[in-house]
Length: 504
Image (cartoon, rainbow, N blue to C red; front, side, top):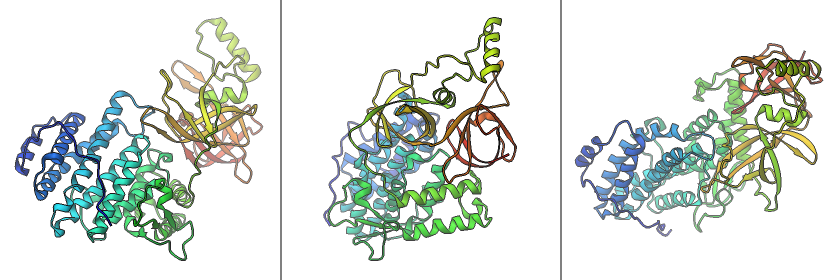
């Protein structure tokens, strides 16, 4: 297996130190309260080390010092760009870029001197290169940014080098990430491809860390194979050609056998259904047992299926966002008119509410123009366009009929083009809760959507602040069903909660 070709090392930064002791002194001079500024400085030194031509052992030693210092700073930087509305602001984009560039350049800087290390000393830089490329992908997932194919190629380069040096399954600890436990280079790369396979962009801010930790614990159970296992079906293997879009080189293991991982998922679901709490199964305490069961079932489903590539011929779709705009699209009325303090405005509003249950006026909800290809919607960059945070409620008229849906898997390209997948509900009634909710100086009506799907229990969608509680009757106006009892939370989004309900 040939040695992988890496992008050329380039920088205009001067190396500020040449030994570990001097590097620690330099690091101590960095600002402690400006993680972005400090990381930018560390990144420039990583680039300087990469081009300095130092002996391989010293290069690795200096990179180790910088990595240890950078890890906590990166943790402080992530909240500035993780799961924010897209496209990013200038400041968010700057923090994101520093984090991605740091892990990418660090990984290449570890990988480049490996041929010049002694055989006994090649495993550590290879493990840290694989970890760095996985973490660079992770930053993209956190930020909702599309991940370039380069990172697949870098992961494959690290694994190829490990195979060539016969250290691919050597077990090592990582003192900078003790919570990850000991593992192998193959495990780091498998972890990255497991996350790729489940479409990490569709997970919520709470779900993603649970999925990441879970696959991190099970990463060594996934096995790279040159040949597809004879008894394997499409459920138990991942075709890396499909996942990477065809960037797997000849001679590289094409198949990732995940049968043991899917068995783990099934067993965890069984234990949760038998009453085991998620915390005892190392699945965290952020979600209820029912929510974790849904998450694990969702991960299992995404490991089984591969999304189709969208057609290139698309049609325009006028999308509106949010519960009140969705209500207006489905009902043709505004639920809460703009606040008019005058007696005339109040009287007119009260009269219309008494007669119609809503304000009968033009909605003026023009929405946004998106291009639809299958279930994938895209929006080209536009000045002044609204930022989007998913999963979220959307509505549109399709073939002359109003539809309610959920936008998921939101991601942003480098040029600020947005894309997301749309899931539409079949049978929806738009109404409002009979119980008004306080909003500033007034009480407002809360939009509510009753869903009756074929073969599914009745469900209810309301905004997160609607005050709905499980097992407490909810009275609804404007729909054929006047009262529901929420029994479980089916789905949470950034601007909605969907409940499974029984009819009262």
